Amino acid sequence: MGNILQGPEAEAEHPFIESTLPQPQKHGSTTAPSLFQSACSESKNHWHIAAPSIFTRLAMFSITVVTQSFAGHLSDLDLAAISIGCTLLISITFGFLLGMASALETLCGQAYGAGHHRMLGIYLQRSWLVLFLSSLFMLPIFVFATPLLRLIGLPVAVAERAGLVAIWLIPFHLSFPFQFTLQRFLQCQLKTGIIAWISGGALAVHVLVSWVFVEKMRIGIVGTALTIAFSWWLSVFGLLLYTLFGGCPHSWTGFSAQAFVGLWDFFKLSFASGLMVALENFYYRLLLIVSGYMHNTEIAIDALSVCVTIYGWESMIPLAFLAATGVRVANELGAGNAKGAKFATVVSVSSSVIQMVNELAILLAFTILLNCIQPILSGVAVGCGRQAVVTYTNIGSYYLVGIPLGVLLGWLLPSGIVGMWTGMMCGTVVQTVILTIVTMRYDWEQEARKAQIVIKEEATSNR
Image (cartoon, rainbow, N blue to C red; front, side, top):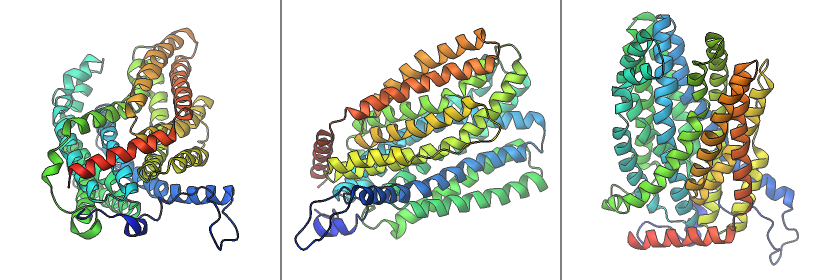
């Protein structure tokens, strides 16, 4: 079927989707791989995706941090404006569009595992259409930022300056549909190294541009906001050039009218994915808003700002594990290897790491611990195409348990910040327990059959 690879050719293109479970002895074989050897092999496959993904996410997150650092050289008001614009406004659209792009981890991962390479390019084009249109519908968040920020209680001067920044953050926001989809398109093909190189290059250029235009030329807060957009679009063009001009000869075969087929089904999966990540991404940032209505307001906001920033840095690592787990599980299901998908899940959870931060409260360290486990379980759901399950779990755990309990404990306990964080962390515990139970109850053979059916139907309709 055209450019779709199957058989030995597909296997040669898939060095990492081969099952890592102990296999029966073949004729002429003296030993079969042990469980330990299989676990090491799967861990190697996992880290082949996760390690560059960690670097990529840290690099792209650092672009915003660098901008905030240079904005602090302008004025306290400008620093507050750029921080609010990035921490509250951008986090809403970032989380939602990032989640929508994770639908590609399901579809592209399974198609790559099955050897249907041409479908990856079609899925990418569908994702461009769906995410870009979604990003346009989210523009009112930036256009009406000032009244929205005043509504939640920010001072007039800060809200107005942040509203000005929000308008100039729109180009940054519009880069998300292409940045996130291209990353996942390449990631599902295990081309994580090129993503890391391009992201590292974009960060280096951003530091130089920020130093020249902000520190030396003093271009002001508007120019500072535009430097973020410039660096993110630089990364987008790098990924796009690699994809379109020879980097993906089997998966990118040109623009296709098939990209307009099945958009509604694609949107439903993407929307569920978007809610899944957005609810998670915005959860702890709500602490900054709620803390403004408590006693010792300034102390609470300052302390929470430090914790949320550290949490943001740390969360880049579990997000990389989420992506790696989603790709590995989807690859194995696409290849019809149910046991391999289950084994990849077990190894992924065992491989998640924790970075302890000195002089932080035990609560933050425990939150980091949970944050290393939960994204792995979410990644398994992404690989299986069950984002809606995680979305409902997030709504119940975070917004029906965590936030009400956090507000209640924040008012009752002597230390409001500890009370709020404890209550909201309980929501994370509930979510982790539910996802663990759901994951343990998966019928992996059925998931593999379902993935095979979907892939065959798509491949047949696009002949």
